[in-house]
Each structure stands twice: as structure tokens, then as C-alpha cells.
Amino acid sequence: MITDDMIRRINELAKKSKTQGLNEAEKAEQAALRKAYIDAYRTNLEAQLDNTVLLRPDGTREKLKKKTS
Image (tube, rainbow, N blue to C red; front, side, top):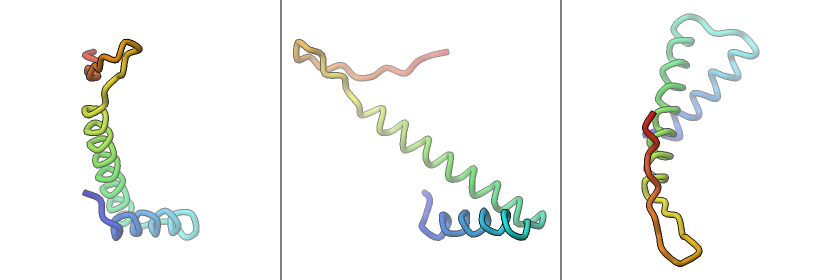
């Protein structure tokens, strides 16, 4: 789960990266925070899509199926 503090820190590091540059520890922290954010985003999106149904014109409902490839 991504907290407000984590998002705030991601933004601080992004701003510092643009203005002053980051040291190696900060770069590693930024990469870890970005990965955690992306993983949480994907998990939330997958959960939302798992609960999505298609409503057909005839009134039937069909759950979305995962694509296997």
C-alpha cells in the first residue's frame, strides 16, 4: 500500500533530481519507491478489472476474462 508520506517522498526526490541531482542512496530510494508505487497501481487496476462486467445489449452480464499470452 502506498501512503501519502511515500508519495510526498517520491515527489521530493523528483524535484531534487531536477534541481540538484541525487546521490546513489537517494537514487536507490527513488527506484524502490517508484517500484512500490507501480506495483500497487497494477494490483489496484487488476482488482478493479476483476470486478468489471460487460453488459450486453440483451441484458446479460459477462465477466471480463484475462488474456493469456
